[in-house]
Image 1 (cartoon, protein in one colour):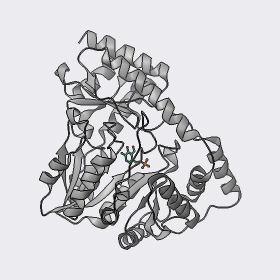
Image 2: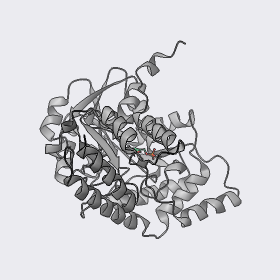
Image 3: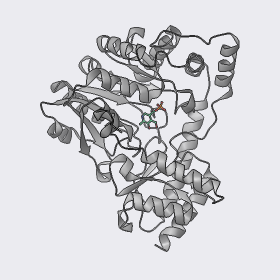
Amino acid sequence: MQFAKRVLGINPSLTLSINSRAKKLAAEGKSIINFAAGEPDFDTPDFIKKRAIESIQEGFTKYTPASGMPKLKEAICDKFKKDNNLIYQPNQIVITCGAKHALYNILQAVIDTDQEVLIPSPYWVSYPEMVTLAGAKSKFIQTSMKDSFKVTASVLKESINKNTKLLILNSPSNPTGAVYEENEIREIAKICVENHIFVISDEIYEKIIFDNRKHFSIASTNEEIYNLTFTVNGVSKSFSMTGWRIGYLAGPAEIVTKINMIQAHSTSNPCSISQMASLEALTAKSDFIERIASTFQQRRDKIISRIKKMPIISCFNPQGAFYVFADISKSKLSGLEFSNKVLDEAGLAVVPGEAFGDSRFIRMSFACGLQTIDEGMDRLEKWLRQL
Ligand SMILES: Cc1ncc(COP(=O)(O)O)c(C=O)c1O
């Protein structure tokens, strides 16, 4: 079969393959603890579901404008102002089918063949693949546990050349849980402005942040970086709405108009009912986000306290999101070998670090209850002690 050249460089998702192997083993009757999930385990809150049901009954089941319904754009502008100190107008917003779609559309609109996109590594699994699909090249900036998995201004500076077009920043980070401080972001912004580099700021885990840290949006630093930044967010993680597929982007109006055109000729509007549900999520009074953030912090504390007592494995204490990125290099196994072995021998599903650009690590999600965390940690500890 002859494929289009653009798909030849695309890799299969390791996250999905470990998940499907875990599901297969569970279907065969094996007891599996799943730490591979990439979504909150909480149900979508009832007040949001109720609004979706009402909107179906009211007949809100037709096309909306391709870039999303005006009322939701206004609510998103209000959210940016309230939470992020960012002033956007509705014509600077596109509502997309999940944050993933926002990232994809931006790269399609901004990046040309042979240009380079800077991606701090470890990175979220889809960034390099989206860059490849845009015909461009990923240039990885290696970070380390010692630097809290953050890119420093000096390393960023050294990574820039004449082909560099854009930097993807993700704070809080999937997979590492790193959260950039305001001063670190300001330094990065300065370098991007000096070199006229666009930034995609993926802020999807903004609300899942620990130890009273404050999320800081790079676009709020100053007008110059605001004009170079696309801020990406959505309701998937903060409102446990992964299946509803609503994300959004905000950026310079001129480019957003082009993104709007890409969307109009590809997917058109994201689901009208999900948009109505997201409007409710963003505007209704609720303490859902605060509750899940504090639950995730308790789980983070539990999983970290257990890992600290184990041989072989060590990890960075995540400052946000719901993943532990753990160094397993002392096991002398690659992330992939480790993940396959621990699944087969201990019934524990984890994601190999290869999915995120580093084979010395595994990623474990704590989007599950405390009891499940304990059971999974019991299995891991027992297995490591006999390795
Ligand atoms: C860092 C990061 N960005 C974006 C996304 C995509 O979110 P959505 O489900 O809204 O497309 C994810 C989902 O796992 C993610 O981890």
